[in-house]
Image 1: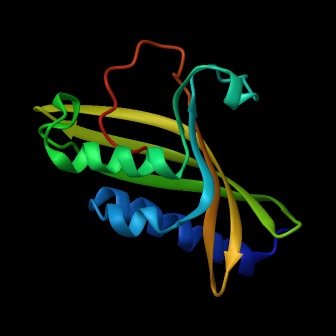
Image 2: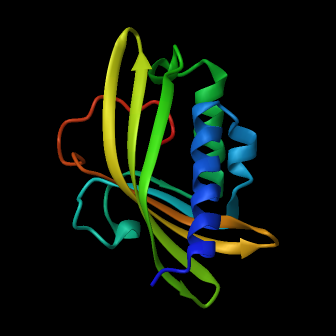
Image 3: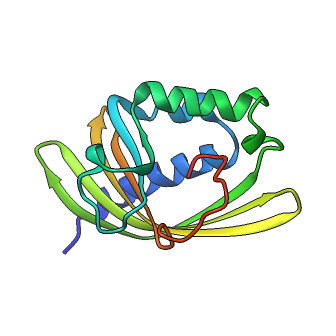
Length: 159
């Protein structure tokens, strides 16, 4: 049986993260991550060694800051005009709560509207969260797109 109080807490936190991304609250979004956190979007859906393989993204703190800067500067052709996005997150499941790390998996359906084109991306997302006061910090966010091995058009925003 799941701990429903914990499930509600992590769900609210993850929904908040999605809302920040959809509303371009990038400075607040960066603060959700621990200083040594990773943000990963692998190409191979079966890969587990993300450090030693090619990924769409494998961001540490510095790379997350650069990604936000590129999105907000208006100087990157892949981000101008900025995409409008809406994320739907569902099917939350706490997979573990061990040694201060809470592992949560959920489904994400993301719609992107840019240059008069509506695109849809679906992914399984696994978060590793660490408690910080009454809330959490993201230790790792792993985004596994269901079509990651397909040819993907440029993803000029944060999944």
